Image (tube, rainbow, N blue to C red):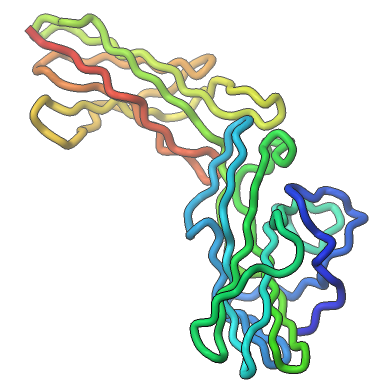
Amino acid sequence: MRIRASVAALSGALVLSSALVFPAAAQAHAGPMTGDDTTITKVVVNGGKDIVLGTSAKQSFTATVTATDPYGVTGGWVALWHGTSFDDQGRDGVLVPAEEGSGSCVATSDQTSTCTVHFTVDPKAAMTKNSYAGTWHAYAIAYGHSSGSVTDGYAASLHIKRNTTLTANASPEPVAHGRTITVKGALSRADWETHAYAGLSNVSVKLQFRKSGTSTYTTLKTVTSGSGGAVTATTTATSDGYYRFSYAGTTATDAATSASDFVNVQ
């Protein structure tokens, strides 16, 4: 399908204004998107990996759109959007590439090219709501060489997550065989509204142990983080080894594993 608006004016980090004009959106597509003679066959954001943002550090990544056209592909463009619909004027947010216009393209044949655009996201400017965490979608455009053929539509989903931190400290050190070891730590998550880290409570955290001389951790028990993200677990000292906490994460919150703490058993 042919788009009806230019994307050249869209640049920067996060677009929230409902007054901005976007290319006319296609219906959601599960497979290749075709318009005139141009077909989008693949869209990949950040190499297919989740995007994790803290409170201040900028994150750079790329998105690629692969397309075919009988006479070659001259350009491609990708935007990321969060909400219920790309064309909904009440959408939560849109991330657009740092550069203006279409991305740089590399031809893999006379008909097919993969075009790359670059994003740089500043969480202080772009992520102003914690509700932005979770599933985002890619909106892609490809420009064919045949009579100005253009196609656009929705493709690919990804997760943009809030970063987490996790600590662990085991005591006493050293400890007598058969005595109780207490492991304490704290689980915190980036708050995009305050731009600080805050304790993450009421989630499951695993206490894991690796015996000295081995390379594999075993989960000893699962506990629930308390007020302010405090995590506490106890176990019986049986042999020298390393203790750590591990949090699995969600589609909106990144996973975290603490550094290990060694305990000598006497």
